[in-house]
Length: 257
Image (cartoon, rainbow, N blue to C red):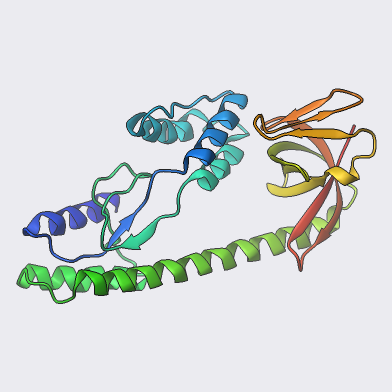
């Protein structure tokens, strides 16, 4: 499937000079700040990655999935990797795909699920008959932007639905103690992924009564003023479910001392 998508994009790209207007599926390099945070997280989890340059970065991302295949924490690492990535978009102006390490890429293969896929087939059919533009590059880009926007809205709705369902499910486990892994640290709290249920919840700093904590943004860590206990990305912790709010799609954890 991927090879077919790549072959179609490359064929149209090289078919004629100047290039024929076409719609591509493009994926940019991850933002630098997210990349640094993810590299730090991977190192803490015991899987350092190389982000010195784009080829090494791409190889490290791809190798990470294989290296963590037998590790129980693989799902957390994969979710963090997805959060780090830039969003793939449809565009008439760029054909490269960082995540797949392809110079040319589009959506061609069936099932045809999106309007851009259908547009790819229409354009390709026309170019195979006669390599003459039937739409301008700016017209295709307008369609690409709209399709990318609608796709993002659909993805947000899917995530909201998943969070709602998880919060609803966790209502049955109020007070339950479980193992978790720290996936995020902010000045207002600690985010943790429950190992058993693969759901993320928030430990609010205001709910931790047995110490006062200082947040160090550069190191992404929390340190207790009294106990000197520190919390970092990737740390295993024990939590209990404090409360949930399905309507707001929120799960709150208690941090167990």
